[in-house]
Amino acid sequence: NIKGIIFDLDGVLVDTARYHFQAWRQLAESLGFSFTEEENERLKGVSRRASLEILLSMGKLTLSEDEKESAMASKNKNYVEMIGKMTPEGILPGALDLLKELKQSGIKTALGSASKNAPLILERTGLARYLDAVVDGNRTSRAKPDPEVFLLGAGDLKLEPGECLVFEDAAAGIEAAQNAGMKTAGIGRKNQLNRADILFPNLQGVTWSVLSKKLSD
Ligand code: B16
Ligand code: MG
Image 1 (cartoon, protein in one colour):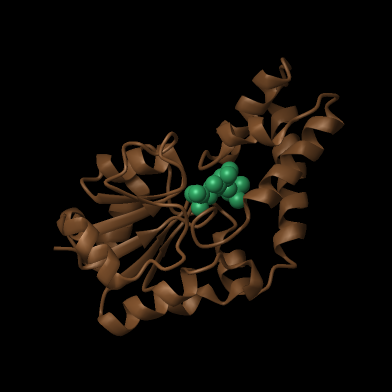
Image 2 (cartoon, rainbow, N blue to C red):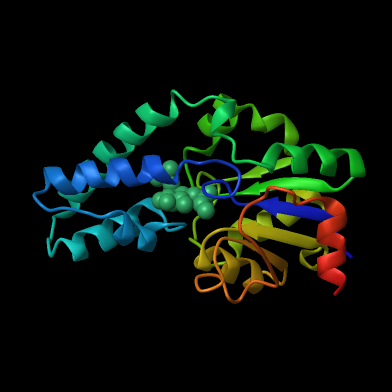
């Protein structure tokens, strides 16, 4: 019986993936190699440091620890500049309708994001008021697929993991939720998220009754 829903942020509630991509591409170019949108798929849902490591391996580059720190700082500076200009229009279609409906239905909601920039995004988009709890990269020490982020979310909502459903757009996030013992709803394509219990292309038209029905099938 689902009593709470935990939402990933980037790629589920907001359209920030393209800002991450632009900022990583800018970094790659400044380091002397190109970086395509297709290659960017591998960075989704992955922490900032792990993303840098993947990017460097793609560019066949090794950096010292100091150089890595400054590369991450420069990527993040660019990214923060972009999300600093976000408005409620950056909320993905269907997300607000679902959050509002869940609030009215008495279903608890939480954020479960790897991003350290989640507070700024929630503030700029006005999403904060629809969430009963927020767990982000500032509170976690272990990256998805570790279940930490979602277990903290369930704890904040005072729910058992088995009472929670997680919305995720990244394979590592689906895995993290399953490691936490939660039901999973994938947002995206079957070939990337084949382990999810249920799957939607996006949140458009996703309602509490659609969810309840699909989960009981
Ligand atoms: P930051 P999510 C993740 O957010 C993003 O999908 C991923 O691309 C990013 O590297 C990670 O947050 C860390 O973000 O650099 O802002 O701390 O999908 O878990 O909401
Ligand atoms: Mg995501």
